[in-house]
Image 1: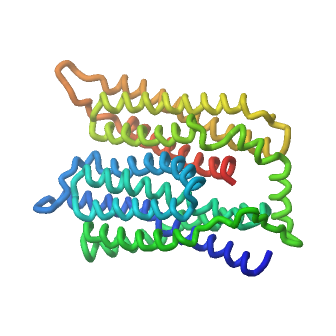
Image 2 (image 1 turned 90 degrees about the horizontal axis):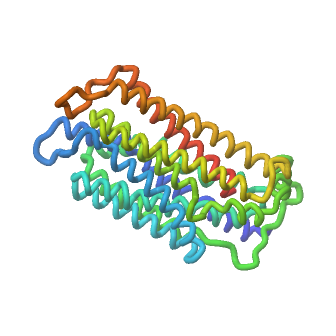
Image 3 (image 1 turned 30 degrees about the vertical axis):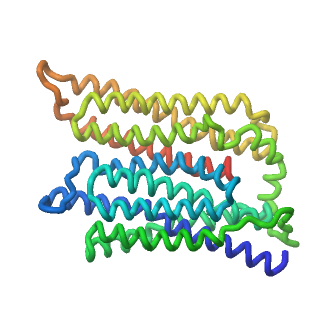
Length: 377
């Protein structure tokens, strides 16, 4: 590999890393939420007039938009390229934060942070890794993907203190404008560095790739990539990942309804979460019967079944836990004649609701790792 090509590849990697560092502002929601809650409790002119129980709704919508937009962004990247896809992401994030900077209404924040910024995170995140991988040999795929994705994970290290400082000095709405302008410039500017290799380019293998790189190349060679993509391609219309991410949103709203003592809403959202989880497992079972390869066909095939099967087992455990929680809460929270709001739950049931919800979010988070390792790398 010539020095010019090698340097070009690393510039794409650096741009992808920097874009993910900027898009990690998603994890600053806990800082934003604290400021919103303080404003609600303080009251007065210009304060946030929200229902305290709905304070996490923008974040939940953001996670949902993030999941769905990644699929659309993947298709856009194939048609218009990674630079334009990331550029769209930067514009969406900037538009969302600008909207939040000019309004403190509930719907403005759901639209700004939830839909616009959430979709922007998905477009930017989806565009950062694939072009970087194309510049390097298969023996370095894991390393390159890890470097680019790491930006999203370590972003809270600097974004949380930065957001806290801005809110403390300028207030929450001016801070949204500053963050919106800054991240729009960063993401849109860096997007032009995300370029695919020229047509016909084939990355050369290093003379001595090292033992880990050799093992990675062997694992990939043990099953042809086209066979995997043909059978378990991640962008199917019935992709179970979207279903599971949606169930995480319904689980969050169920927990919010429980804390607000809205019994009916809590129960139907809990049931919907269980149904979505069951549909996810059904989709996984269908996938197992249509893969075209078996558990012992190769190391890659074995890894596929072990990773997805182990995760599926945890999903099944979560479904059983939510079903138990449904019947326990139903027995305990029966309304007396004439009552409309559910009675005060016991600490044990409240703890189970929180624990069940957090476990379900953990299942979602693990699936992100499994999805990337099994379907994308």
